[in-house]
Image (cartoon, rainbow, N blue to C red):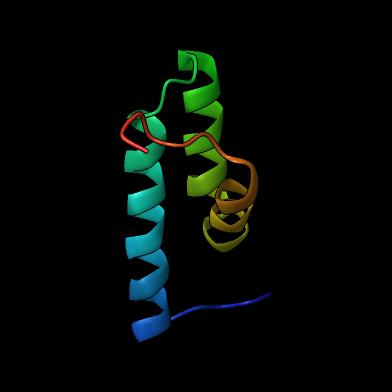
Length: 61
């Protein structure tokens, strides 16, 4: 199991928070927003990478 700690863990946390804020601010439906947030929370690194590639973008983008 991959364990992330220290500065790497803080970086992942910041990126995940940024992704969640972006998902919440996107134009996606509420159901899709909930699924994206759950994916990011349950799989922090993998969820972020999947969101980065295929996730909804914020309305400001």
